[in-house]
Amino acid sequence: MASHDLIVVGAGIVGAACAEAAAGEGLRVALVEPGPIGGGSTAAAMGHLVAMDDDPAELALSAYSLRLWERYAELKDAEFSRCGTLWVARDDRELAAVPAKIARLAAAGVHAEPVDAQRLYQLEPQLRPGLAGGMRVPGEAVVYPPRMARHLVGVACSAGATLYAGRRVVGLLPHGALLDDGQQLSGPVLVASGVALPELLPELPLRPRKGQLAITDRYPGLVHHQLLELGYADSAHGDADSSVAFNVQPRPTGQILIGSSRQFGAADRGLSLPLLRQMLQRAFEFLPVLRELQAIRVWSGLRPATPDGRPYLGAVPGRRDVWVAAGHEGLGVTTALGSARLLVDGLLGRTAAIDPAPYAPGRVPAGAAA
Ligand SMILES: Cc1cc2nc3c(=O)[nH]c(=O)nc-3n(C[C@H](O)[C@H](O)[C@H](O)COP(=O)(O)OP(=O)(O)OC[C@H]3O[C@@H](n4cnc5c(N)ncnc54)[C@H](O)[C@@H]3O)c2cc1C
Image 1: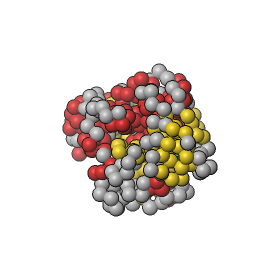
Image 2: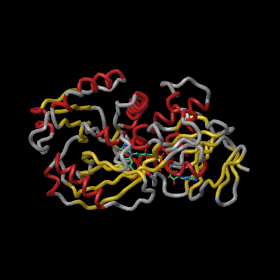
Image 3: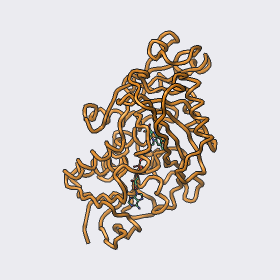
């Protein structure tokens, strides 16, 4: 039986980052992935690296992770583009929330600046007239997530990790994992299987939250920042069965990526045309020029959502030698690097850079509804 110091289940951006961090510490890592590397939720994502400030734990993890992403700012494989984020206020009420947001971000080490209406249109002339202003976070960026996952797996393998490609973990053993070809791997297991988490750890509540995106042909220079409406967090953190928010991204190719929708109760990846229409309508309201552009592709993906929106990071209560890094909902690309560091620090018994308690898997009572 092959023996490892850590068996990572799943090579999405989270599993890939964990494998890279663990292999970098000299651990003998196995990484098991049945499909393409980064082919799950990671491939469907927008790849916006963003600090979300409405939950202190999410802010701590995203701010920590943004600092770790700086290491990859020059990496070609990451397709890192520091476009910055521009949060748009529709009216004075939304604009009034900006100073408190700037203060919360500053306390976490993320620089943001207020934007008045005049500056808003200097920054993004295509926005519809009549908006109140907003907030700019100049250091934030976008990456290409599946490519970054492949890069991290490559680094892990160069540091000695073994990739079990095309293999699936079908069961957890007392001290290891059983693969679908009957092979057994021995060692502590880290489950990083995204929305498939309940197949191996049914006691950790998690449900898929579908998102749809559309991408246009190439229109370089039309939009400069990742644009979001300030009401975005209401959609991201609300419990509504379905919601949409204005969220538009300039890809380094000149394409414009249009999001985003959130939908519970749909475990398949089929498109919902009414929701897609609603999402595009929302985008047109803020950025009317989009109506004139050619969309070339639409797709959907599933966000792995926990009941409180925070990921599970750490040892799984009641199971020996089983760890988890999953449930990153709509922020897993941003927070993969910080998650991996927290996880590996926990494995090695080290003090982590941020408090790991808010992400402890045991915080959610077993059997709680996702
Ligand atoms: C539409 C959309 C937009 C998004 N935009 C952003 C964004 O802009 N910024 C951001 O930070 N986040 C974003 N996200 C969220 C982000 O994509 C996810 O949080 C993140 O990709 C989760 O990564 P993961 O590695 O946990 O899961 P996945 O990428 O799904 O990886 C899990 C892997 O585990 C494998 N697996 C499953 N079961 C097994 C098994 N039994 N054995 C072995 N392997 C297994 C799967 O094949 C898969 O490759 C978005 C998500 C969606 C859907």
